[in-house]
Image (cartoon, rainbow, N blue to C red; front, side, top):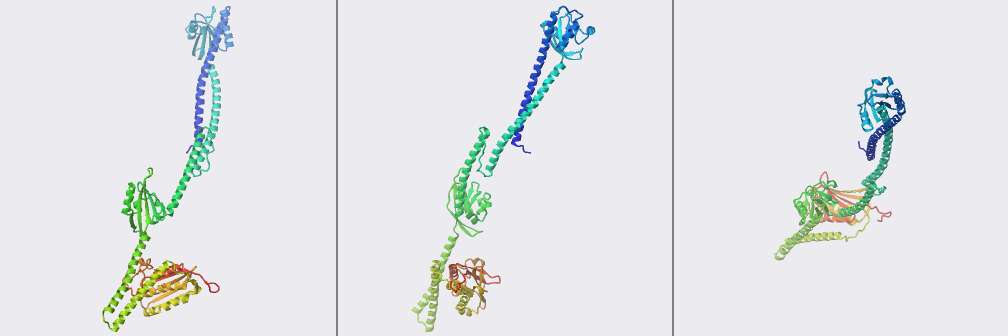
Length: 592
C-alpha cells in the first residue's frame, strides 16, 4: 500500500507531538512528584516543629495527660503524633491508647529520633510494624521535662493518594494536549498536503505536456521556493521544447522534401534517423530506425567501408553501387558528425538510376541509329560501286537499282520516324481535337494495312462499343498510334492468325485493345518495348521488323493525347496492347 505525503506528514507530526507531550509529561510528572513529596515533607516538618513548640510552652502537662495531648495534636495535623521521652519510652501516641503505650517498643534508636536529638530534625521513611504500612516520619526535639522528641508520621498511602490526584490531572492534561497536538498535526498536514498536491498536480500536467498552467503557490516558505523554481524551469523548458519542435519541423520538412536519402548513424553504427527517400530506397520502415545496424540496412562492403571511415572521423570518396533487391543505382557519400555529445556519421544516398538508364538508352540509341544507318548505306554503296565499276546486264542493273531504292526508302522511313520522335519530344505537334467516328478510324487502319495482312493471311476482327461510336480527339494521332500497334502485331503474329481490335468505355476513358496470337512478350521486356530501337527478338531481321521506332512513337502520341499505353501478355498466349485516352463526347451539333 502506498502511503501519501499527507498521511506521512500527519504521522510524522503526530509522532513528534506525541513524543514531545509524553516526554514533557514524564518530566513534569517526576518534577511534580518530587515537588509534592518535598511539599508534604516540608508541611510535616513544619507541623512537627509547631507541635514541638507548643509542647515546649506547655510545661505543666503531666504524664497522665501527655497521651491526650498527643491525640489532640494528631487531630489537628491529621497525622500520627508520638511523644518520646528522653530514655526512648513512648509517653503519648495518637494512634495507640494510653493503656497500650507500654506495649510499644523503645524509640530511642529510631533513626528519626536519633537525628532529631543530634541535628535538631529527623526525617525517615520505613515500614511501621505497629500500623503495618509504609510511613513518613518527621521528628523534632522538645524542651519539656517529660518529652524529649515529638514525632509526626504520615502514611505514604496518603502521599500516594495525593500524587495519584496529581497524576490523574496530568493524564487528563496529557490527553487534552495529545488530542490538541493530533488535531493541529491533522490541520497542518492537510494544509501542507494541499499545497504539495497542487504542486504535484502542476508537475503531472507539465509531464503530460500541458505547459500552460503554472504553479499557483508562491508562498515565502520552502514549498513556495520549489513552486517558483518549478515554474521557472518549466517555462524555460517550454521555450526550449518549442524551439526544438521548430527546428525538428524544419529538419523534417527539409529531409522529407529531399530526393536524396539521408541516414544518420551513431557511434555504434545504429541508425538514428532515416528520411522517407532513404526508407524507400533501402526498403525498411520507420520502425527499424534506432534498432538496425547500418550493415543490416545496406549490405554492401563499399558502403560499410565509407561509413566506418566517417565514424573514425575521415571523409572518403563517393561510392556508386546497385541494390540487387531493388535494382536501384545509388551514389553514397558519408561524412562524420563532429558532436562531442553524440558523435556519428551522415550517409547521403543519391538515386542515379534514371541517369544511368538514360545514359544507357542514349548510348543504345546512338549505337542503334548508327547501325540502322550504316546497314542501308553499306548496301547502297556496294551496289553503287557495282553499277559504276562493272558492266551489268539490264536485269542485274534493275535488281541493283531496286535494292538501292529499297534501302533508300528504309533510310527515309528511319529519318522520318526520328524527326517525328524529335517533334513529339519537343511537343511541336499541336493537338487538333475534333469529333471522329471511332469505328471508321479503326476500319481505316485495317484498310491501310490490308496488303501486308493479306500477304500473311491474317484476319482482323473489330469491335467498337456503341456508346463510344463518336468521340472528340486528335483522330490523326490516334490513328497513327493504332496503326503502329496493329502493324507491330501483324509483324510478330504468325501467318494465318487473327488480330482482335476492340474499343470500350471505362468510366471516363476510352480503352482500345489490340490482341494477337503471336509468341507474346517476355516478362523482362514488357517495360522496355516502348524504348527506341528496342526489339524483343534480337535475332529478328530488321528488314521485317521496321525501324524499331514504331512503339516509341505510339507512346509519345498517346501521351500527347493525355492518355497512356501499356503492353501485357494474354493468358491464352499472345500479346495485348492497351491504349487509354480520355473520353470526350461531341457537343449537340457534333462539334468538340
